[in-house]
Length: 188
Length: 202
Ligand SMILES: [Zn+2]
Image (tube, rainbow over all chains, first blue to last red; front, side, top):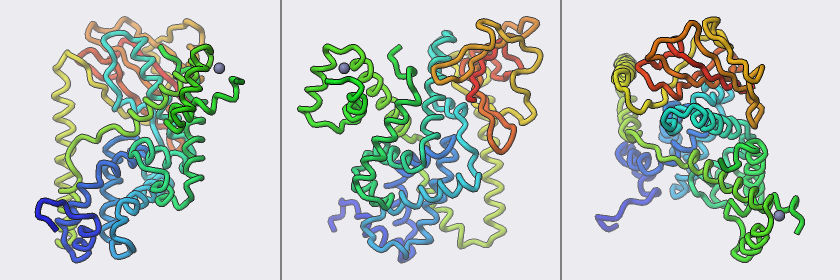
């Protein structure tokens, strides 16, 4: 391998299995942006999402021997974080979505115009509530596709379904959100 | 073309799932059809909002160092680990306090601040607020959320803020969350607000 070439996931997995924590750190650094974003679609705050992502990486380290194909680390870590998100959600360790807390991440309101601030707040809150209200498998497909730019085949691998099902889930997710947001999507 | 059947196609159009020819045909139709133009624009807006929400960059410190040091810490004795966790927690608390303290004196652009209101906080607002009754019962948003406005009585101090509160009862408890959206003052405390705008997600 050339010195300036980044090691592959498979290579890093092999080194991690041998106990090389630095190699695992490199895997974390490579995949954490996506893992944190996907976690964020399950949690009310970015800090909760980061806790979830960290839990997922620690579990991956423990279970590394179970990863059959070391080159498939990416779909595997996404599966782990999504399972962790579902578990936490069901055990209510994470509070259910609070649309209000999502506003935390919104753009600051424009000047002193209360009606514009209220309209922006309402759209943000409504989008958050609508995404949170999607069936889990639709939300999962949407966050992997829109957020991570994953192709249908990779989402299918993560979700354990075929590509046609992924296509259907993405379409349904968008139709439901369109219906739920209604006239809020009209141009101002 | 029959427009009701096009609704689903505009979803695919905005998602980028159509071929060039299909897009061209739909655009040609929309040029002469106002409802379809509106539907197209709404679907495109949804797509933009989704991208903003789901693919937002994750700034901040990398998790990588934290994870690696956790892996190393796992080899240390349990008590030491626990002490380290306690130290980390108290550091986090002081950082949060510092951030809030830094925010207080600045008058220029207010950052949204999140408050977690104690479970006992009454909702609708406490009796020191009076609902603006126009229209009676508040107005309904497009999604059916109730939006009500409350002003403090007697008139609030000059530095009081207008506070936008989105309220959503959690199923497991009576807690609500509140977000300060427009606190153009020293205070980001609803107790000192002149006006409360309550969006009830019921
Ligand atoms: Zn039409």
